[in-house]
Length: 269
Ligand SMILES: O=C(O)CCC(=O)C(=O)O
Image (cartoon, rainbow, N blue to C red):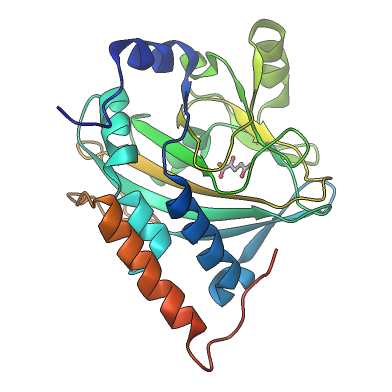
């Protein structure tokens, strides 16, 4: 019996709430390594930014295909894959993964949306996806932790687009949902994760604190639900499961490469 399987009570809670907190999903040394690599990585320092409605930036380093780096290595972890397969009730593959950084004092907000609000347009025909957001730094209300509306995945997909100066889920529909559903702030210690359904409404605030908010989000789709047209996401594949030591070894290789003479410096945040 696998160490990473959820209890039937946890699976039930995911289906009821549309999300599930997974305390201490990863051990401290793996998260310390991930943070050290991310801070040193020039590719992340130069990553794209997402501007919020007031012009504040979140950094987003997103990759479709799996690569030879630590971020991709985490996406291979059975600590994530097994619970995801349980809640989606079938084999999954990695759709994409992203390192997210909200820098102290200036990190931007994310507006209410459902991931499937966008992935629908990528011709994923069923909402059979889930995302696992892993706290790399401590995530708090002050530095812009993830917020979710409990049970909102059961509304099905709602309209997404540009409404006034906001892009995201239809704000009138969100306002109605907020009258009936609990708003939950997913405050997490490093290594804790939240697994959420692709129709769960979520957002996050700006980071007005003195502390950075790094996180890694790994997104998965059911293998029997390939997109009708291939876009940015990874092609459907049988996802190898890597044990912790193989993931640590990928991190060590990347760390050594980043320290090599001539390697450009990353972002110390
Ligand atoms: O990083 C965050 O706070 C939210 C990111 C998000 O909602 C997304 O990538 O879909």
